[in-house]
Length: 405
Ligand SMILES: [Zn+2]
Image (cartoon, rainbow, N blue to C red):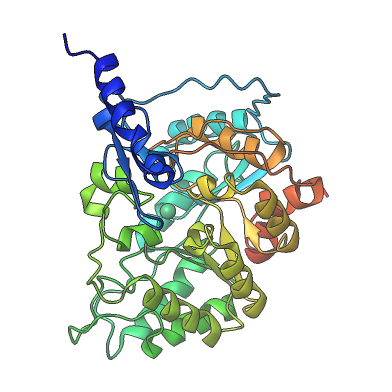
C-alpha cells in the first residue's frame, strides 16, 4: 500500500546519507510537489516559495484568480461614506443620455444629490448644434440649470491647411454658446488620428498651436486624455498587473511594437504642455502616472499650467495611502475630482478613500486591481480644493456662487 508515509520515510532515509547543505535543498515536505531553485530564480509555475529557494505546489488544484475570493477576517473600523463631505464638481462627467430631456436631467439631479455632487461637467466634446440643444435643455430646467455644464470638442480630423482657422472659429462659437472648456480630447489623439496628409497627428504638432492659444485667450481649460495605463503597452504575461483586464478586454492591448509607445507618447504630451504655458491643461487619469507619484510630482512642479483629474485611478491612490496623502497635500491646488464612467454607486469609494483612515477595503472593480484600498484622510482644506475650488478657479465660466468658502 504505497502511502505518503512510505514515500516520506523513503526520502528521509535517502537524505540521512547526504551532507547538510544538500539536505537543505531536498528536505522539504510535499514530495513531488516540491522543487528547489537557485538564488535569483523564480519558482516554477504552479508552485510558490515557502522557504528560501524551496518551492511547493498546493495539494489541491489551485483556483483561478477569478474564483479565489477569500473573505477578509480583518476586523477594523469601517466608514461607508455615501455623500461627500463637501459639494463636488465632477470635472470628468459622462452623463450618458441624461442631458437629453428635462426629465432625464431631473433623474441625474436626484442621483447627484444622493452623492453630494453639485455640478457635473459633461466631458463629451459637445459642439455646434448639439451643444446648443444641450444648453437649451439645461437652461429649461430651473432645478438643474446651474448643475450641469458641457465641454466642447475640437475636431482633430484632417488637420492641414485651413484647419486651424475653422477650429478656432468653431471654438469661439461654442464658448459663446456656453461651453466651459475643451474635452475630453480622447486617447486617439497621438495614437490613431491621422493628418490630412496621412501622417500621424503628434500631440505636439505645431499646426494645432492656434487652438491652444485660443483656449488661453478665451480662459478655458483643455481636458486631455493621453494614452493608456503603462501595463497596456507591455506583454500580457503573468507579471502584468492588468492581466485580467487585458484578457477580459483584448481590444485594450497595445502592441509592444506600436509607435509611439507609452514613454514617447508622454514625452509628446509634455512638449505640448510646455510649449503653451499660458494654456490651462488638465491631464485625465492623473496623466497615467498615479502609480509613479514622483514622476507626476516632477511634471507638476515643472509645468505650472498643468492639472490632473483622479478619474479611474483610485486603485493607485488607495494602495499607497501615505504617499498619496502627502502628494495631495503638496499639490492640493493642481488636482480636480473627476469620475469618468458614470456609475452612481461607485462614487462613494472615492469619498471613502479621500475622507477616511479606513484600512484594507474593497475596490469596486477587481479587474482593475486585485488589491485592497486604504483611506488617505485628506484635511478639509485639501478636500474642498479637490472637490470644487480648483475646478472653479481653472474653469471660471462655471457657476461661481453658492459654494462653501
Ligand atoms: Zn472620460
